[in-house]
Length: 471
Image 1 (tube, rainbow, N blue to C red):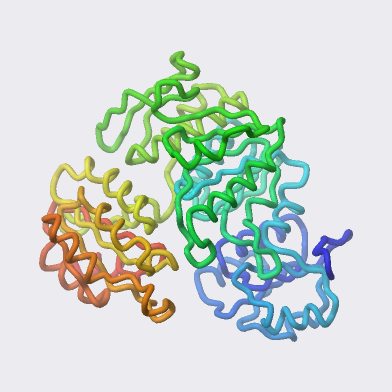
Image 2 (image 1 turned 90 degrees about the vertical axis):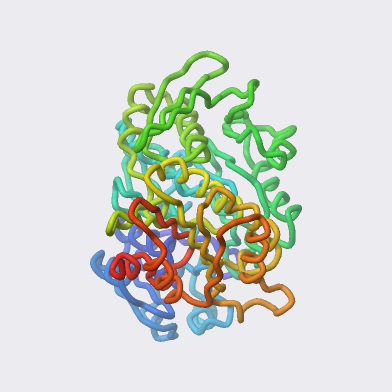
């Protein structure tokens, strides 16, 4: 098939690389919508394998052309799948219809709905999750697909009967046959732009390349669409000039349409006030930590107001929002030592997460543990920038990147160099070659009242449970 259109009368759908977070969610959505769904992946193992099997999705471990022998009406190809994948080769030989994950999401789940698209380098998952919960609390019965597990729903997807769908708009590329960003496949009713920074060094050449991609997205927004744009990002300021869509700025600047002020911290709560067009809009409280999360909440408040959600419903929604797994998630407390898990990996996210958690560490130290493992964080492009990310931590533990062999030698990030640079800033910084040595160190050094903040976008060798057990 040449144009990747989705045929009519689809009944049977096969997903290649089904065990990824997004593809797994899509598989479940398709199953709930009444389609016969199968899937394959290179490695099929719990918890995703159990989750999908419980939903009635037939799984195959390993890629094999036989997985297509039943001749599905449509094949959805994950973005990590290469064109020489045996199932892709067989798919082409058989002349099967195929599409990408965002194409399928747009066609099957977003069709006839009003997309609320949350975009930006940072904060997409949290903002999308707040948004979905506020709409649910307002009785608007939203559909959503988000790159994290919402604790309020214990799921990263939902099919609702309401007219809105909340989508985490990813700037990452779509598939081997479509190198455009995933978010380009959606026509948003309302969009949020939280931030624009350089990231994903495996697909973007530089910041200008990132800005071009976001610029293309903004160019596609019509005059009927509304954009909520963060007010304190120079890259955003340059990108939103002369756009067709309606724009409302949000943040802390005096001239912004939506303004955050009056922040007060009274653990576990953070209170804040909001101005709308320079008039008092409401006072709110949340258990989210940090100004960056209050700004995420502010953008969701603005979207909710644009959808005519009452202020009291917004307020109740923020108070009852339970956050997302792996976002400032307390995994346990042992001997007075709190172990917290967070997804932070970009230098800005690491800095803001530490800044957010620090005021809540009233009984002891904040010990920051960081594993660089993304394609960007394992490269030396952020080598110097990371040095400025740990200032608010009382102690820092840096693990050697676990997958450095994937990176060319002259581009590799050095954990040892980062620790040396942090020490020159008078930080109590420590280098570790592996996870075992970090656990041993923390068992000796951590004391009652301390918070151990563990930051990684991967599993980090199950350090959270192992540390709690060792403590």
